[in-house]
Each structure stands twice: as C-alpha cells, then as structure tokens.
Length: 253
Ligand SMILES: Nc1ncnc2c1ncn2[C@@H]1O[C@H](COP(=O)(O)OP(=O)(O)OP(=O)(O)O)[C@@H](O)[C@H]1O
Ligand SMILES: [Mg+2]
Image (tube, rainbow, N blue to C red; front, top):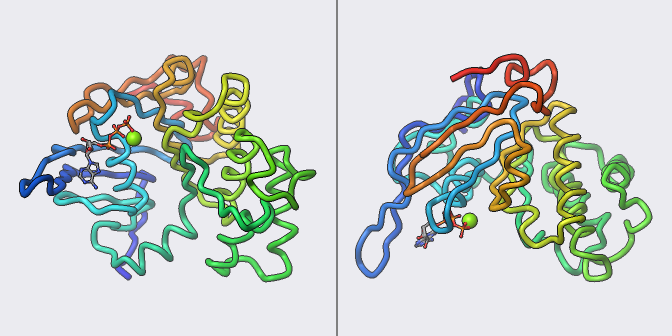
C-alpha cells in the first residue's frame, strides 16, 4: 500500500485525463481536470449529461482509474493503489451513495448498514448491529430496520443507503445524483440529511441536475466537456459547512 501523506485537502485531482476505448478508438472524456476540496466543504457538481461528472467521481472513489494524472484523497495516492488496496481503503475512508440506492435486496436494512462494518472489521462484532440501528435511527428509519429494501419506499431506501455510507464513519461522502430518483419532498428530506452531515463536519461531493438544490450548496463546480468550466463559492451567509472548517470562514479562490 503506497504511503499516505498528510494534506490540507481531502480531495486533490491533478491534471486528470480519462479515455475510454470506443469502436477501436480512444475517446477522451476527462481532459486534464484539476480540483481541490478542503475538509468540511459541501460541493455540488453540475453540468450537462455525458460531460464527465460520474467519470470524475469514479476517480475520487477509486471505482475507476485515471489514464493520466494524480488523484489523492486524504493524502492517499489512489492512482498508485492496487485494486485490493483500493477496495480496503474505500471501505474505511469513503461513503458512496448512488442514484438507485444499490442496497442488497436479500438483506434487511439493518444488515445492509452493518455489512460495510463486517467487511472492514473496524468495529467489534458485537457493536455492529447496535451501531447500524443507531445510524438507521439518525436517518429516521429505526422502525424499518428489519424490513427488506423492497418493502420500503424509494426515499427510505435512499436514507438507508446514506446510513450504510456512514457505517465506518468516513470523512468523505460522494453521491452521484442521490435525489435523481426521488420526488420533491423526499429529495428535500435527503438533502436536509446531507446538510446535517456537513454541519457535523463531513465533506460531501454531490452530483446533481437539480439547480434548485445546487443553488443551496456553498460551492458549485460545473463540469463541461471533461473540464471544470466554473467553480463558484456562494456568499458566506448561506454557507452550511461546518463552522470550524476553512470553507465556512473563507470566501476565496
Ligand atoms: N466505461 C465506459 N466506456 C466507454 N465510454 C464511457 C464509459 N464510461 C463513460 N463513458 C462515456 O464518457 C462520457 C461521460 O460519461 P459520464 O457518465 O461521466 O457523464 P455524466 O456527466 O455523469 O452524465 P449524466 O449526467 O448523464 O450522468 C459519456 O460520453 C459516456 O458515454
Ligand atoms: Mg452521471
């Protein structure tokens, strides 16, 4: 496992390119994208469909690798890690939330939330179930804990997926259109959960097509044609970041 060095940034992408083979040719989707995110920031990633938002997130989660360039999360060089190292690292350091929840259908909500703890072995066995229940309680689902995903609503499944993302208490949450499949009221409740997590000190990167939601996030990054077209910081009065984070006290860059 390559060495992780302390860094003031939780995410650091340096000149990332990513090409995919399409019909015998390499198509470049990310074209030298650079980005830094500090701990405690809440960042919206927006931009037209097919312009590289999910591809960029996949570099940060280590789900995919850059063709060229460097990506560090908490000072760890993901671009130099093996698949095995990445899987172990991801389980402990990152929470990932997808548009279609991706809960395991044969497991109860409680078992879904406990699973990342079992895989990482971070918490002692007897603490896992109570901790999973506590996390479900935090997202308002304690009374649904024994149900299978198919027995609860989409919004409840997404809230369970958020609880699962928090299983190993990662500092960084990455969400790809987490409200894309939810109605307005349910999307709002999921968004408020995110705001609460940022207030607790988590860092969140969230891809969204919802301009109204993006407008309530302190920093908006627009990805166009594989590059950052725009990186905007909101006025401090609407910052929802942790009051002690640099993001909350500095209007900058
Ligand atoms: N594994 C792959 N193989 C080939 N092409 C890919 C692959 N993954 C992504 N692409 C292409 O890369 C481009 C960017 O895709 P990406 O999923 O990052 O877009 P996006 O901005 O997330 O779009 P959306 O808003 O629709 O989710 C698209 O043209 C897509 O077809
Ligand atoms: Mg996408």
